[in-house]
Each structure stands twice: as structure tokens, then as C-alpha cells.
Length: 356
Image 1 (cartoon, helix red, strand yellow):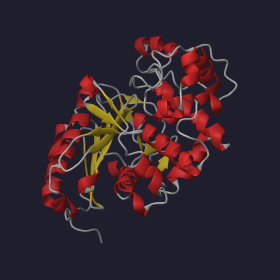
Image 2 (image 1 turned 90 degrees about the horizontal axis):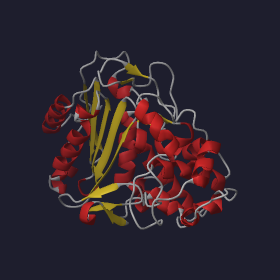
Image 3 (image 1 turned 60 degrees about the horizontal axis):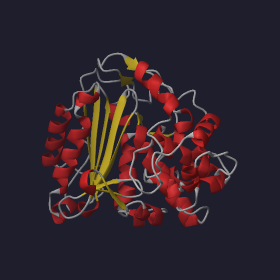
Image 4 (image 1 turned 120 degrees about the vertical axis):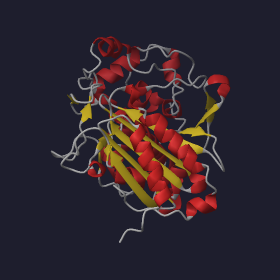
């Protein structure tokens, strides 16, 4: 039998769910290994309960890819400071800076590459709900990289790049001698017990359906094409809690070393370099210790996961969105930040069950 939910935590999450303007909402918290889950939203309750659906994670997928990178580095299959061209040696690169890009630069968004390839920009502006990624195969991705001039010398400036993270997919695949989906499954998903996490749509009725800004018109499942490593992961709230618990208790997993590696602060970024970044996580100051988090979005869904190691607290927020004004990301961050403000001894003893 699940332990009784903490009433104060359940009330806090219910208030947070009410602030999010979206058709479907899930907020889930793990504290000291105990879980509390709340759902809501303006849409009719789907046949499969919201907490059991698989959601598109968008850029949150990058945390899985970089954890895989850290695992392969620990295993000796590659090194973080390997040049990208060492694993993609046949590319006719036209710009000297491109040859200096390392796997570390790609993971930390310091490669100098643009956010997305320029040939995707125009289509995204003219047709915001048309998925240009679907027809973008790996050969096209590599050809585009070969002729792209980095905006600055690698390692000198932080610039968020889906393009750069996408290139980690073929690079890791080449280094390990297998496909990216097989690699992620064998080296990350299976060892962490993430049985409801996939790189594509599941069977009918198991996936959340995204929405356009009107909150009613459905959006088709996001096919990320060659941007698999940057935005293709789908997961249930339960699996995401398991994923966060692995980061909070790495010693209890087969990936203890890589899980610790991805949490080490590595660089400072933002206005006056006030923000810190690890190999994959945003790293903000909070009570008793840092708060780590990442966000993601697809054409019709939003996702947030974050954790506070000092209080062993993690939070998952998922929504089928109604535009950018649904307030999910802000609400999730503020909720986690408030939970992090509780003293560690109180957080460690907080209860939690499954309130839906």
C-alpha cells in the first residue's frame, strides 16, 4: 500500500495545477523517494488517465543524450574533449572553427553553432505548426553542418543549439558502433529501469495529444527526424520521477558515475555570467544548495523537470499546452524553488503518495 500523501504538499500542488492554463496538466513530486502526483486541466479527462500517458519532452531529451555521452566517456568509448570530426571523419568541413568543435562543446552549447540550421528558419516562421524536422534526415544534417560557419570560436560563448545536440546523435552512434536508439536504450533507459520511456510514439491511447494555442485543435506527434538526440524522448510522469530519483540517489543505480558527472558545474553564462551550467543542466542557487532543471517543448506540449539534491526533492511538470502563456514553466520552477526552501531534515521526512 502506498504511504498516505502529505496534505500540505498535495494542497500546494493542487494550487499550482490550478494556475496552469492548459488542456492537460500533470505535476509530480518526489521527496526523499516518496511520490505525490496531481493532475488537472481544462480538457475532458482522457480515457487513459493523464498520469499514465506518455508525454513529448522536446529539449528535455538533451539531458538523456548527455547522460549517455557521460556514460560512454566513463566506459572509455570516447572522451568529452574529442573533436567532433574524430567521430565523423568524412565530412568536408569548410570552416576552421568547425574542426575545433568537441563533444563537450556540443553538450554545453558552446560550439558556436546556431540554434537550428538556417534552412529550417524560414519554414518555421512561415508555417509555425509545420514540422520541418520530420524530413530532415542525417545525411542532410551532416551536409548542413559541413557548410555552416560557427558564429564564434568554440568554447568562448554559450549559445543554445538544437543543431549542436542533434550532431551528438550520429557522433555517439559512430563511436559505439550501433544506432542512437539502441545505444540510449541499452546504456541509459534499461539500466535506470525506464520502461515507459521511448524515442517515438507508443500504441494508440498511450500518448498525450498536444494542442494548438486554442487549446482544442490537436497537434500531430512530433517526428524529429535527424534531431532525434535533441528532442525525441517521450516518457510517463512515473518514469520521469524515476529519472529524477536516479539523479538524487545516483549511488543506487548502475550509472552512479555518469549521473554525478552531469551535475558538476562547468561554466557560467547569461547576463554578467550570473547563471551556471553543468554538462546538461541549468544550475541555479537555492536554499541549502543548487537547484538543477531543464525545460522542453514540442509543437503542442511542454515539459519541465528539476531537482534539489540537498532536500532530495524532484519535480515533474507536463502539459498539453495552450500557447506560451499557459504559465506551466514558471509555476513549476516557482513550486520547486519553494519546496527547496524547506530545511533538509523536514524534506527528508515528508510523506507522499499518489493523489490524483
